[in-house]
Structures are given as structure tokens and as C-alpha cells.
Amino acid sequence: MFGVPFTEIAPIVERSPEAARQLASRARRRLRGTTTTPDADLGTQRRVVDAFLAAARAGDFEGLLRLLDPTVILRIDPGTRPWAGPTTLTGTADVANHAATHGRRFASLCSAALVNGAVGVLAASGEGVLAVAGITVRGARIVEIDLLLDPDRLARLRIAT
Image 1 (cartoon, rainbow, N blue to C red):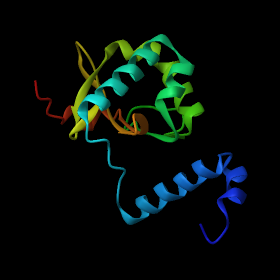
Image 2: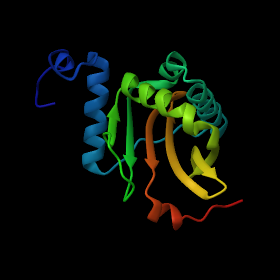
Image 3: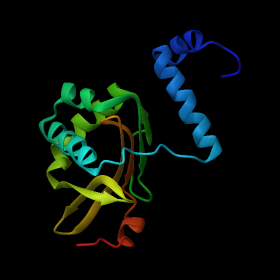
Image 4: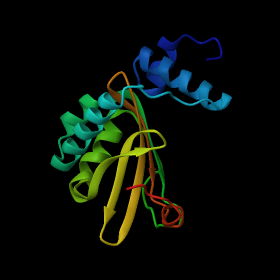
């Protein structure tokens, strides 16, 4: 990143040199318009997502930390829904804290589902779909979560049964 060693950047972003390198790599891919490719094994994806949901239901912060890549990013699209918090969280502590805090309330409505060809999460109640999360699993750890809460976009989804 601009010729500065990652060991000098890491303290600035409060990450290890390896995590700072990964953050820079992801930033370059985003700028180029490429995305992180998930593990091809749907079974591994499913095991990781199921474990994530179980830890979120239990409010198990330590369990969530073990499932998240150090450079994990959570992007939240609330759309027109009122949203008081940040729409982007990065790092294991922030993402695990969010999942542990909100998981007890919402994870019981969630189940694993195929989202854009990968294992993700569908949250639904008797009133319909409340949220969809695309989850990217690499090396048996979650590296990205894209949480869609926008009621207008959710209303247009076609859910295969």
C-alpha cells in the first residue's frame, strides 16, 4: 500500500501485519470490481453457517470469534428501514459483538439457505422474509456477510421452496 511496509500500517488500523495485508488485498479487489470467492464445498459452508447461527442464538461471543476470519467485514443494507448503527463493521470483535448482541433476538428466525449460489441465511416469520444474508466462507471461516434488511428489495425476492 503506497510502498509502506505492512508492519507500519498494522498499528494504524489496529490489526496484525497479516490482517493489514489482507485488508489491503480486499480493498484492491473491491476497487478492481472483483469479489472474494467462497469455498466451493457447500458442505463446509453449511457447517460454518450452522455453527455461526448456533453461536449467535446462544450469544456465544467466543464461539463467534472462532468462526470469523480476522479481516471479516459485515455490510448492512437497511434500505428504508430506520437504522441507528453503522452499516459496515470490520474485524472479529465488532462482527462477533453485533452477532452475539442481536443473535439471541433474531437467530431463532434464521435458517441456512442458498443465497446467490452459496450458503447464507434467510430470516423469516409468519409475516414474510425479514432479512437475507449472503455469507462468504473461505478456509472454513466467515470472511464476508452482506445483510439485506431493505423491505422494498426483500419484497421483490423470489424464494425457491
